[in-house]
Length: 333
Image 1 (tube, rainbow, N blue to C red):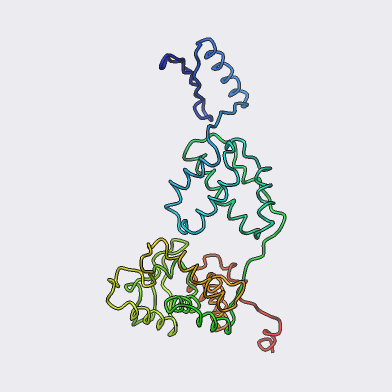
Image 2: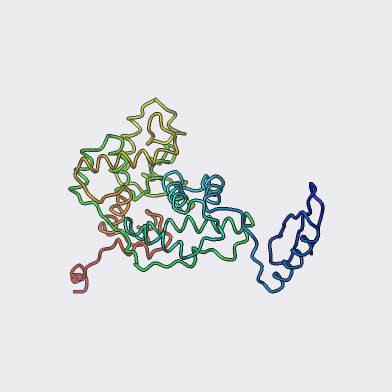
């Protein structure tokens, strides 16, 4: 269906056809408008019509950042950084000119300085932004170019386990509050975001359990606490005293710091303590790996460990078992 109408002294032509977004163009001559309508309908009939997209990659990412990122967990520390990286690299490139070849060059450039998993996470953000533009903003792209990109290197899952000696040194150089967060992390396998959201009302002192209402998978869970982990939480409560309403405010909070910045502040504090302790290649998330490994070492089964860690895919837990052939000899007899 096509129509031409006069608008502000010019002729606006519109073509609508099932399977295509509405095509619109303005002309000074009605004759040119009719020619464009006819050519557009023929291209649509032949499935050769490619509508013009007046949006750059930067504009798309900025819109995605404003509309979508505020609803995502971890947007402040990770996704915003990746959006910034992508905007700086692709700049004002028109979105409809973004090809797998451009993405491959970005991939190869980034792989010179970062691990493959980092580039994959960059592309996860870009893929999500483009998909959102296609589905929700009616941007007429034929396909998402990120789906065509491949990786030559197979990334190995990171399993960095902190040793007992490293833990002692790290705690010696950490601030009192960070030290208690580290203890909670290695005793509970909680993620940093989960630790930053612990409130007094979530702790069941009698049953020695902790309820985690907000998780990465959006599935709340209740975990058992070791005596050491529970004592760390009790010590943090005592350190806070009567300064804040403990029932509503996160236990691990920084003064003069917005709640959304707790994680970033903890990252910086952790890095300083780690460097002061002379420890290399250790991240806060590695404390979760350490805790999970220790749970297996204590003899817990895979389902029991999953109850604590919150893993939905049990295959992800296999990398933490660290089973060796010599460890099984005694069981086989």
